[in-house]
Image (tube, one colour):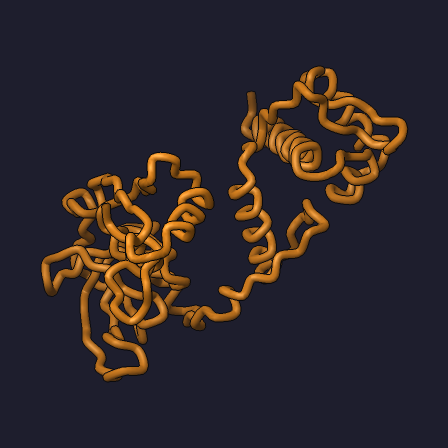
Length: 277
């Protein structure tokens, strides 16, 4: 098979996959789907959209049925998604991702529900050139020399470091770089928006193979703050589906700080909802 034929077949497969994902999303989270929905979303003819629906129904006969009263295909009681996940939180995260994606480029709109993302409006700006170099260093395994603002809007002191970027992290509504610091001989986190300037460095890139805190997977066990009223504690447990009274979060050891910070653990000025078990 020639490369061109292979690429064409792969493209056809990807298009079908996207359309099957859309069908299941509408069946799962909407009132069903019509050929017109499919045609508008993927810019295809109504006849082509109907053919996709027929093909999906033939491949997965227990998934959907046409409701003549609603004039649309709806999920059967036996419906179980094959191409998407049956998880409400993940679907809302997907919608949020779509809303963020539209800031960058045109995205296929898979829902009539619009999410207003306040966090996006509160994020700090990122320098384009600095970000380009950091991302290239991540992909190409290169070290960089950076000028870094230690404490933003506090001391305004800067420092110079040579780092080997290993991982991109989003935490506390900011982007961070987990990197090996050649000056301190340690793996540290750097806030991307605090990098004032960056250039490629000739120093050899160091991987995260020896980053013990990154490579170790731990389970953080939390319980409702016992200083809270009992009814509040019970409401917290019910909200997070923790019938045994303990909330477990599996994560990399290096990320525990961000998890505890977001849950306001050990902060004296506010009452924490959660505390370590």
